[in-house]
Every structure is written in structure tokens, then in C-alpha cells.
Image (tube, rainbow over the protein chains, first blue to last red):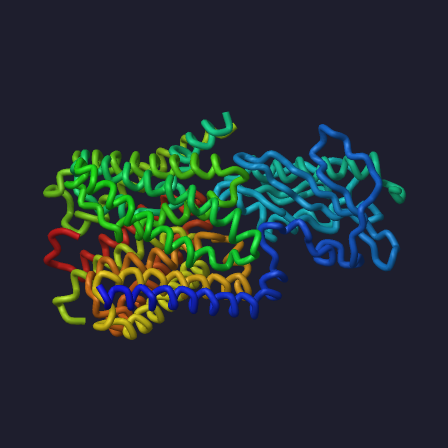
Length: 191
Length: 188
Length: 175
């Protein structure tokens, strides 16, 4: 009984030591982890999507209730409006896909990023890869984009992913919603 | 409605064994005795439910407010051990499950429990977390029963020796998983 | 490896591989989980030498669980800090896998010796097979998307194990 008690105490001490060491390691790596910020990717780095801008500001714009648009922000560089960051939610095959779309003042898509999705592993989740999202780069935000299977021939076409048509179409739909919003509410300086 | 959908999804379309590839070894490393498989499944499900309640409370009321969520793994493993101990104790006391012979280690080594709990704590409400745990446990039991049933139909003497045992079970599990992909269509 | 331990080792290796399936969608994830799990195993078993022959036998498992969870948390923090793309892909599966693999190996080795040499040999086998599955899935997955779906991991591993046991384990009766 005595030896058991002794080792129970040792166990408790061990747990405390392990917790403290983990805490210390966490403290040391905290900044680095925060930099990578997962899960809540909502605070995305605007520079990666719109290189000319360096900060985001809320805009005073009404967002239609029934649209896919979730939020619209202005992208600024030293108080000069460079473009917009529009976040949309689009229904994919199995999940809601959140997309951030950056559109420049001149009406060009400068980049998109998939913020969250839960599509089929290995198929639908390819929409989050750079390979797919980069296909939206430099498209003109005038007319809706269409998804095509082969190589793109026109500027308003985006090449899809074989085996993930629904997921890819959902992304295109989301981007189109952002384009429509841009054309109806924002074009020409917005606020 | 949400609850029912979540339950059906975790049992069928989002099954932990077949689509998340967790707890595979416990499923294929079993005798073919149905009754003990079902009993083991029930015990795992009970552990899952108890574990999800404790861990949800611990996480949302203590770990997150105090900002020490990096301790999650250590503390959860401790709870897991205690819950496993408790489940085995209860099953022995009840006497009914004596022949199952499930050990504490077997419950701790089942990756489904830890995974379901870690996903469960991120749900908005404790009820979701519990439903998720129930679904995970029932899904695990279902696959265990199905695979043992499939193995009953395989005559181990007639297949190539190299395939006997684990390989043939894995292949059967794979075919079953492809069939279960069909449940994906249920999602609204 | 002597033949006495062979069967136990193979069972433990099999259990570890089956647990690691989640990480086999690509070579990168397979390799990183394989390496990380091996590190957890080796460090945990090293530390266990402090308690062996001193602590009561019934408590060794609890010590092992706590230590595994501890090293796993540290590894997960390192992953979060330095390998964000792997965390984005596997998320909470990283701690689950590392923890379970370490525990399951210990259970099936079923000894309280914590022999490092044994663990080392087992880890190498584990990394090689996991990477093998990862490579096959990555290569074939480019052509046939069905290979990237979860079920393919079972079938590929089934065939791979059958081939391996056909080559190395001539007098095999049961796995």
C-alpha cells in the first residue's frame, strides 16, 4: 500500500511536470503558431491576395439578405482604396465552402482563397489547392465565369477539376456572386 | 432534425472506420463471435458517451477559458484511461459481459474515441458532442459486425495463404467502404 | 531481430500501420506522421526506462499513457509551428494518430521491457510501409481519383501486406 501511494504521488508530480514543460514549449512556439493561424482563417493576409494593399477596412454597405455574400471589406494601401475583399459562402457537394475573393479597383480578380470547406477528401478538397484557386487569377470581374472541362479558351472560363465538378462549380458560383455584387454595389469607387 | 441527421451521418456516410480510417485494427483483429463483438461495441459506445460528456465540460469550462488548450491531449488521455477503467469495472460488476474480456488497454488504443471526442469538443452544444459520440460508437459496432459476417462467408482454407488473416479482411473492408460511399448521397 | 520476438513485432507493426491509414493520402503526410510517431515511440520508451523495475507493474501502463500524451502534445505543437500545411491537411488527427500508434504498439509488444532496439527496428518498418502506401496512393491517385478516396487505403494495404507476407513469411498460417 505504501509503495502504491508513493508512486501515485510520483505520477501526479509527473503529470504536473509534463504540463509545465508543454506550457513552456507552447509559450516558446505561441507566436509562430499564431502566425500560421488555422481554423479561424478569417483574418487572412490581404497582401497575399492583393499585393498592392496592406490593410482592410470595413465598408458601410448593405449586404442583401438572401445572397451568398457574407462580408465586404475595402483593401487599402495608405488610405488609398486598391480593391475589395469579398467573403462568400457557397453550398458545395457536402459542405458549405467559404471563399475570400479579392477584386481590384479596375475590376480584375487578383486572387481567391478557400477559407473553409469539408468536401470529399482527395477529390472535392482539391478546390482549396493553389493549383485550382490560381485559375481565377486575373479573370475580369465583368461577366459571370463558367466552368469548363478542358483547357480554357476565353477569359471568362475556368478549368474544373475532374471528379469534383460539384465542388468546383460551387466555388465558381461563389465567385460569380462576388462579381455580381461588385458590379452592382461597388464598381466605381464603392463608398 | 439536426440531431437525427448528425447521427445518421456519423453512422453511415461519415463512418469513423470506413471514411475516417480510424479504429481499423480493433475492427479487423477480432474473433468472429457476434455476441462478443456486439458487447464490445456497446462498451466502446458507453466509454465514448461518458468520455464526450467529461471532456466537453472540461474543455469548454476550464481549458478554453483559462487559455490552456495545449494541455488537451495530456488531460484527455488521463480521462480516457479513467473512463476505460470505469467501463471495464462496470462491465465486470454487471457480470453479463464477463466473457467479453475487453481490457482497459483495448479501449485506450481505440483511436475512434480520442478522435470523436476531439471533434466533439468543437461542436456548439454538448448534445451535439454526445450524439456524435453515439454515432461514432454505433458506426464502429456496425462495421465490426458486418466485417465478421463477411468473414464468415470467406473460407480461409481456399484462399491463397498470403492473403489469409489481415490482408483479406482489409480488402473486404475496402470493398465495404466503397459500397458505403453510396451513403454520401444522403447529405442534403 | 530474433525469431522469438518476430511474431509479436509483426502484430505490433500491423496494428501501427492500420492505425496510420489516415496519413497515407500522400508521401509527404505519410513520411511526416511516420517519423513523428517513431519519435514519440522512441522518446517515450527511453523515458520509461526510468520507471521500469521500480514502479509497480500495474501502474506502468498509466505512466506510459501520460508520457505518450506528453510527447504527442509537444510534437503537435511543433507541427503547428513549423509544418502548417500538414496540420491543415490532418488537423486533430495528428495527436490522435501519434498517441494511438504509440499505445497500440506497446500493447501488442506485450512486454514491459521497453527495448529501444526493438522499437527502432519496428519504427523503420513502419515508416517504410506507410511511405509505400503513400507513394502508391499518390502515384495512382493522379490517374484514378478513386484511389484517393479513403477505401483505397484498405485495398492497397491488403495487397501490399499479402505480397510482403508472401515473400518474407513462407510458413504463414495466421496473421
